[in-house]
Image (cartoon, rainbow, N blue to C red):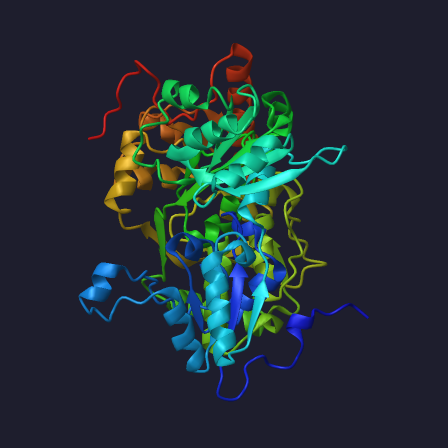
Length: 556
């Protein structure tokens, strides 16, 4: 029998007349660091209360109907003015809980290290409102781990945690007298002051120091220095002064943060596409698995639909074909895209049919993604190309018509209105009759927002993945031509040719016509680029980053 969590027992935590509050740690910023219990609590929430940056991390695990009231801290001016619309977190939490609702109060890091969360817990206890605490990965632990900075070694180094905003002279004196690791929570523009406090308290100026901003996210950046040189490092690197000087950082002081160790242990920032903004010109449904793969390489995918799918102008042909499918008109049905599966599935649902209607019919899928869509429908395809995942690959494995073993000689081919004739011609050559039916139309999508268009034309993206010739034509048509600093990656020779016809330089060509192989090829390109920079002694930069003296990009 598997163990059960005491927080997920079948007894509801919501008692009669009372709500329930879950104080939840959202971790340092990477949504992947949320605990299983956190995901469960978010899925059951009626109300979700969090600061905007925390809401961005946890919102995807909550129901679409969850209420997310705006959290506004009451200041003295608004209180004096008698403005009742500004409410702080504790008031929002208590109001929702009094109404018998399930409330999740999410905070960055861990609730036990958040002073405001502690005050809110006391308010719940005072009114007898039941609550629970779901711990999260604390910033002071998670950020150094992602920066490649271990806090302890085999000798059991002492570790001290300091919040520079509230530390007094006694605190600085204690950590200054220690030779252990000190983890300091501070802001970017206060790092040098915190370093000065430690030196004044007895730490040597040459003590190694690492400073990490936006830790555990793809915006993470870490600087190596010493207590005595950090101010100069920030000045030479033009890190400060900056309008982002108020942003929080985690500084680690001690031998465990030595640059020599971080060079070996920096697993996160050394990913092949770390921080790259990659344009994925596909529909969101199609782009999901591709975007997940890009994130695993450290990239920040930005999905821009270039093609919209619409029903055929005359649905009668599709209706006749589906009825023929049920009455035994076909020996085979061949699916050449996920959209074709979706179109047939929708028509089935319209007629009250399900996957059982495929009984006795052989089913072919052009590739793994299309096969996965069929399996999700409840249909296991009989034929998927063993080699190239394309119409040509499908034809290589397709059996010729045999009048002895095949009682029916007809194939149902639901596809797009702009599909090529390769598969139809090949099936006819193999002796099959083909009902070539327009199941859906592909039309050019609406233009993306203005800021996305400017980023495309102005070099704001590091790379763009083109998965077909139509994505090239449509992206250029709705958003303009990508800037020449942007890395262009194409799924195959035909797509590359179309890109070149539009004046684009193709940098990456997938070895196989697969979106996952395309993403893999881009990651290999990024890794070679990174290794070349390190070998030359140059800083590792992204394609979109400007270098001193570089030609300014055209933004119009």
